[in-house]
Structures are given as C-alpha cells and as structure tokens.
Length: 249
Image 1: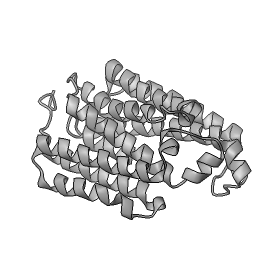
Image 2: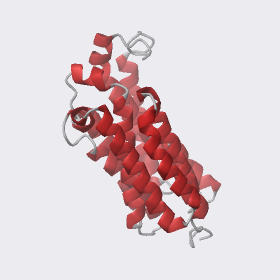
Image 3: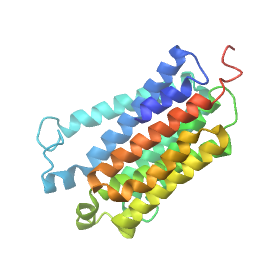
Image 4: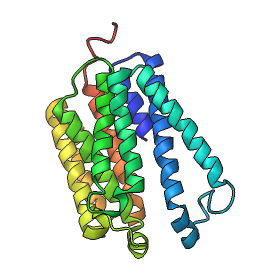
C-alpha cells in the first residue's frame, strides 16, 4: 500500500520512469522495516506459535532474513541518495525508514509508539516533493502523519490482548481497543476534512464520515479499512493536485 501511494504521488512530479524508481526505492525501505520487525518479534512469535510466519515454521532461517535485510538496506540507501529523490529528498526518505526501524527496536513498547509512524508517513510525501526541489506544504505533512498514526492504532487493535500479555505496551495498548479505534477514525476524518479544503472534492467528506464507522467493524478488519480509506484519500488528493511546474524540466 505504501509503495502504491508513493508511485501515485511521484506521478504528480515525474514521468513514469522516475516514478517507478521512487516506488522501488520505497519498496526496499518497506522490506527493511518489515523484515527487521519480524526478526525482533521472532522470539515472541515462536513462543506464541505463529506458524503463519515463515521463520517460525522453519521455511526461512533468521540468517537468510538478516542477509536479505542488509541487501535491501544497501538498495534503499543507494536509490534514495543517488536516484530521483536526490540527496535532500533521499535523506528525508531514509529518515522515514530509520524511524520505522526504531519503532521495531524501541518505540513499539512505550508511550511514544505513535511517533515513528507520524515521522515516517510525513517523510514519504516530503521526500517525493523535495525530489523536485519543492518545499512540502504543511497540510501534506500533517495529513501524512495523521494517516500513519491512524494506521498504527488500527493495526494494533487486532492483536491488542496478545500484545498486552507479551508485555508490549505502546500507546494503543495503554488506551485500549475502543479508544484506539475511535482515535483512528477521528484522525481519518481530520485528514479527509483537511484534504477537502485543499482539493474541494466532495468524496473526501464522505470518506471522512465513513472513517467513524470503524467502531462497527470487527477488530481484524479495521486495519484493512483504514488502509482502504487512506488509499482513496490519496487517489482523491492526487487527482486534484496540479502537475508540478518542473515536470518537464
């Protein structure tokens, strides 16, 4: 989902070629964050018998995943700094990747668990905007941060009790399922309203109202709903955004 969003945003600033490279760069960053998360969680996953994960059921060895993570890290570093994003945009993207890794190793289990999501999801549109030497607008950074935090709250809800039993006490676990879901829906609503004032797209008001329906969904579906609404928000945003004046440069 994050890779798709990055590609859609890149298309407003670049033609398809550089946009594919930016999407690939973001994808490599997602691999680094995702694989380090699985490595950190491996002891807990083994204890709980999560056999749907390949390292737990023995299909992959931790050594293989570690090596693959290093390869992905080399790719994301090279393509961030020497690809279309440039040094400044690429550095901001690497900040987002580093923030995601920091969540895995430290922030996941404390009150500031939301912070890496806020930073990483703001860094993504910022890095793409900076790739064309344009200053990211404040509303875009706020929207990205709010979407990231909303995804964090919704994603934790489905494993809330399991995380608490394992001693993982991030902000969502402290607040509980109902409050976390309510905050997730509220953040989605705020994003939709904010983007509406920028784009004047009525659909965004409808999406914002739908965000509050998250409380009615089973916990396991809430994260999927948040991601779907986030994607629709981005599509509406991208459709209304003017093409960068530097597009043909």
